[in-house]
Image 1 (tube, rainbow, N blue to C red):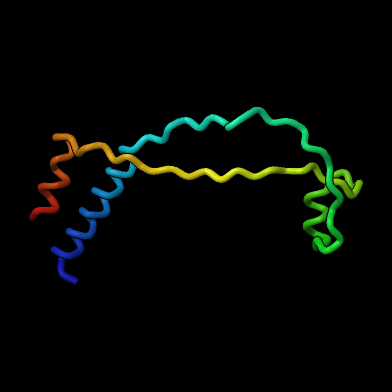
Image 2: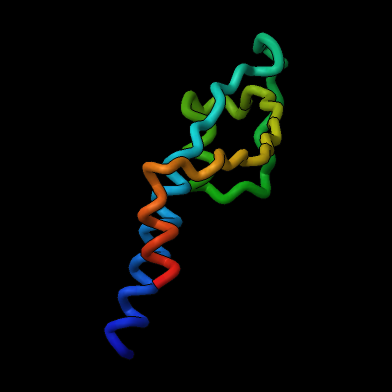
Length: 92
């Protein structure tokens, strides 16, 4: 590889890294307060190692757990003049 290709790839990587760190995540608030959902019996088909991990008190009952799926979209801010060096380096 030529030095120009390596320098171009390094510059593109640094520009991508700088753009990724410029995006700030919004704080996540839970959809509602949690509450006790009851207990369920541990299934017999669970491997012993996993059963010991899940059932800490070894009573055969586990707390019922609900799951939540989170998704989002990243908003990329416009490139400011302070980051213009990235564009000028990539144009070379």
